[in-house]
Amino acid sequence: MARILIAYYSRRGENYVNGNIRNLEYGNTEVMVEKLKVLLPEADVFRIETTYEYSASYMTCIEEAKLELRKQARPEVKNAPANIDGYDTVILGYPNWWGTMPMVCYTFLESYDFNGKRIIPFCTNEGSGMGSSVRFIRKLCPGAVVTDGTSIHGAEVQTADSEAREIANEAKQQ
Ligand SMILES: Cc1cc2nc3c(=O)[nH]c(=O)nc-3n(C[C@H](O)[C@H](O)[C@H](O)COP(=O)(O)O)c2cc1C
Image (cartoon, rainbow, N blue to C red; front, top):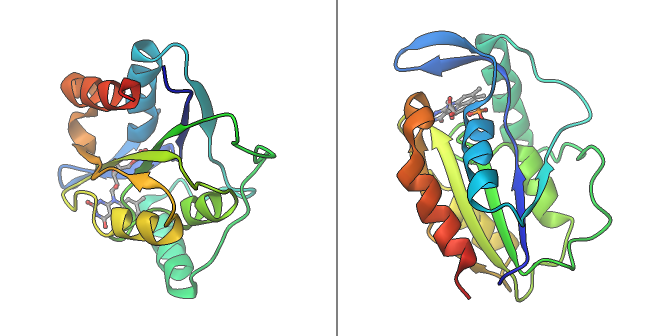
């Protein structure tokens, strides 16, 4: 059985849902991770967080994120694990932000040696799918095997059980 780490970024607060702005008590990616935890009870879980909070306002947050993308910022990861040597499979979950991952996921990927590991990405989004995130993960982690990833429509995350099973089954293979 593969030693699995589920690492994810998710933001609570206002978000864009089927064309409207809604306040999410739990982030969509976070909801997906709760499903994965049930399917993969042996996996460890690390919530990727920045040392500062993005605005809970959707309109402000998209501007903050746009600026970070433009600057190619590398926000610090709060309480980052010293290493991830003990895992051979990393499930990486994140929302699509401006067509790619939040910049803190870039920081996370650049912080460790992923050589020989498997990265299984999944991305919740409002229509842009994985965007260019998988391309960037492959670029940042050239020694890793990176699967094509699973895209989940954020507005339908509560019922995304088949996608959760797909990710969990992929993680268990090896
Ligand atoms: C800053 C920001 C940028 C976003 N950019 C996109 C985008 O480019 N394409 C898209 O489909 N959804 C976009 N979204 C919507 C999120 O990807 C979607 O709501 C996701 O499920 C949120 O996950 P979370 O609740 O785990 O953070 C964006 C949301 C935010 C807050």
